[in-house]
Image 1 (cartoon, rainbow, N blue to C red):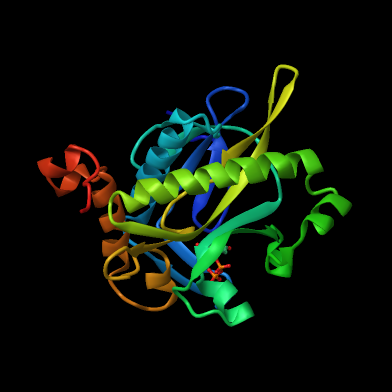
Image 2: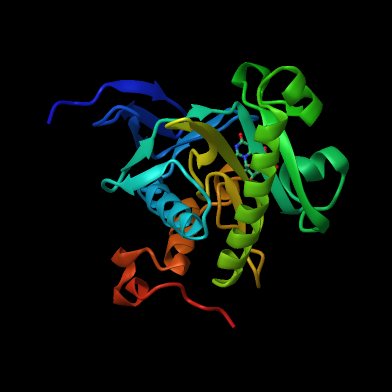
Length: 254
Ligand code: UDP
């Protein structure tokens, strides 16, 4: 098959032209990059795991009526997605204090927050994705008030659903980042979940031991990075390579 035309290459993914108009192919790389420290590396097998984990989580979310850009996974590293107009915001949801929230506000990592907090960062690598408010977003036209209402409603549903899904397999969803896009369908314009949801953009801690199973293992040089990602997939019941047992489905923790 002729190689598809590459449209965009990011830190962890490449976007290719899709087989039909309005579709794209999203390819998951093993490359890891940390913006703040400019730390670069390869996490062997990360792309394969993130492709599978993101597919799984988006499919579960679609089952509860959350619209996403995902059409289907194509192979180990690629998925077919709908082309959307990306809203230039990184939407972060936090349930437990960690990372930049802890640093910025001096709240100890691991402190459960009084309620889930949504933050917006303007997607602009040249400015290092600064934290912005709704005022900035609407004033500068990055999204409308209606877009923000849709984003908040979807984000809260995603957070509640994924928090429960992960807790069921003994993982605390500490925080995560999502991105949304606008999808034009006939006359309608819809805000849909885009990008990916994987250990690259979630903080996932073992509920009992607090052990980190996400990109912080790479960011903070904790070692066993691949193992962390694999453990997430294994607990979600989507790591068939690990044995027959793992084909059955999620493993309920007591
Ligand atoms: N995050 C992300 N991409 C970014 C920045 C953050 O996916 O460019 C995710 C990160 O993995 C974490 C959440 O958003 O799950 C909150 O990250 P935080 O603001 O604490 O920043 P960090 O400490 O990762 O720099």
